[in-house]
Image (cartoon, rainbow, N blue to C red; front, side, top):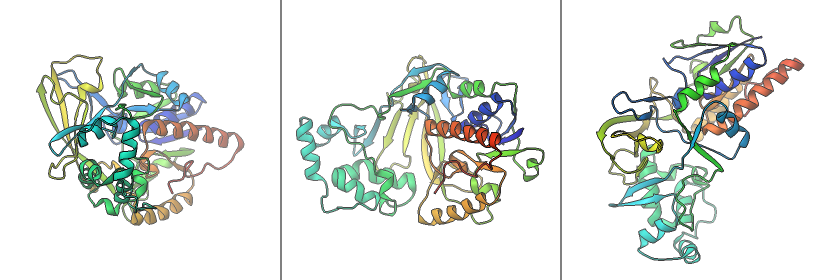
Length: 381
């Protein structure tokens, strides 16, 4: 059986590897000049710093099978993401924790006192939060909302938090201890030599052929038994129903000597600062030592046709259009849409890999029984 995979990122790499191991002939194409999609990393020629070219990717998961899977292809080093934010002339730790609360309000509360205090300042008149703003006000009150969420969200999404659903902030982390590890997950780390060698290792199989700088054209489907498509869902259909909405990022790179900000990620919560954050990439590999440094300022804006899409907007208008594209995809046959772009969802790396493993297994089972492979193993709706 011959299979065409569109995209050389995590989704198609993982699916392709599983199918190649099962004896199938796998061809992977990508329009870019490199593998890895937005996970692509490379060493800076001047400083030796490992740079996450399309923004930082930190691996975190509770899925032990996925953790074991990636560790079979590379060595992961322990790494915990500790995010800081500059707001109102001070630097605070995120997510909101006991130190953040005491620092902001200039108090020395213990966990019990802080819990009661936050409940006191929260807006209890909001019983059923419907918007992002409602959600923040209900759980942390107006001070923290305006200091840490309002300006940042306006910059990130290009609209008022009143126009965003509460679901974006449903799991608002507030910790009543001094734990400033950004993630809760059991397994957290960074690949020692970056993500590119890991994906190279996944693709290193005699049954896999990789063709870069190759854009998918509909006629390519001829000669293949099935297509796995990780490009934009609307793009597969040449945007015939309209374009799904995305936010994109512009990166302003700058290099320096020494240590620019003392941490990997510094958010900027104030609305009058045009960028959302600065990332300093040598801090993503604390086991290395570099005299120089490489930093990126991130600017968020609406995605235009020639931009790289990052964050699906998924507001009411986009969800209606998404439903039409899903119906079109399900009526097409012979193609399965995967990954962040193919399913129009924001996916962390571990979820991407989990869904890729499940998709590969579903395809193998379908091939064995003669069943038809669905357009989506995980529905975008």
